[in-house]
Length: 551
Image 1 (tube, rainbow, N blue to C red):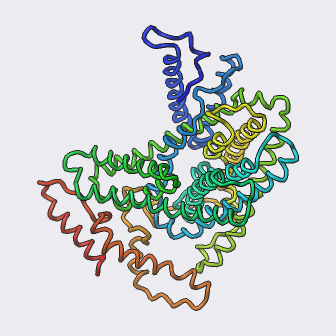
Image 2: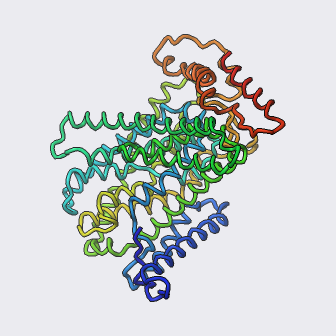
Image 3: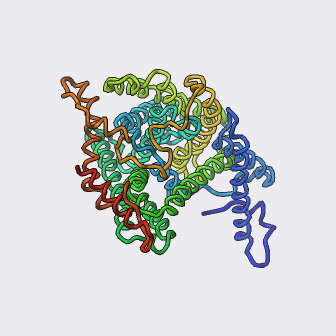
């Protein structure tokens, strides 16, 4: 990682460290102190109806950037130089893994087809609209020497959503369907945007033909399937290793370490084989929460749950804090100072594309999804559709990272067109996150008022991995009754799409109990330490649960 505060603090060198080394140490100290400030201020503003931790980190980053800009005499505004490797290799994996590890699997897989519809098909629609608009309008504006690959990259960059602000406001117990859709779509959307971005760079787009288009689609399907299988395979391998070797007999540290390292290994293997690391580590988190997490000791369960959440929390704050500081990077703004109106105009046009591209798929795809739903409470009503549309309007760290990857070299740029796109991306990210983010909580309260007598203790599903007691695709304790009921034979296409849900859950549960859990552990597997008086009873309980599933 490269630090650029040497000009500001270079005179503070010591006898033991060189000037550049000492300035790096000072930069890290200041950045860590700012992270602590974000946590403290975010805690104090927790009950505020307008602010959230993401916006707090952005504001603190902006204020810090102004201070550094003044101290450096207008030469620098941030402590760190942006690195795509820092983002994609170190910051993004813990965020995505924790999302999969903490996900409510029942709601996620119950709405899986709708999530894929929004996250994959919807992202492609948004990408097409934004790319087409960019080609038609930006070419006429003559903003710089941009090629067809750059215009398609713009479509991928601004198709990547950031639903953190909305998820911080939504309550997954009050609105499980809405939370599941927004959350799931956000993960699939990020993965799809990155896959499209990489695919665009791998193909010769100077002569776009039908064959090239089908190759792009085929590559996306291939990456989606292989990345998912790799993540599931890494999760199952970690479950099998921990179940067979009983790391907890000697050290819970080894159990925690193997879970963290296997999760990170899955992401790096995906990158090594040019797959989607986001999808891989996400499904690795889901499989680990279903199998591996139940194979470790109670101490390790508590430790891993909080460790993964903490790493994800710090990484998110780090990203938003840096985005706030980098918004004032004088190097990039200096290229557009002669035509600031152009940058503002480009930003406004891109924001318009985002609004239109989002609406172009949310409402039509919601209509199609509702056609496949039999019960009224499973359908997406208009208010929920508005919130889903709104949740995807914000752009964040993924858009920033992709923009830097396309239009800069190691965080720097010398081309006018590239500088315009970088400054426009920064403007869109800041405006959408702060303005739309500030309005999110009041909008949610307006469209989805909380019930007066809400009993939060009653929930259809546990809220953390510690209480994950339902099988993957399971339906909780009620599922025994549901699965025993007769399911009518589908007599129409609509019934065919809406009735098989419970049968899929039923057959998966039988398969999971009969074949998967005896090999990979999971719910019902209780790791025991030799010599414990309750070893025999735990083993009998474990065998009873496994036998129960096979009957």
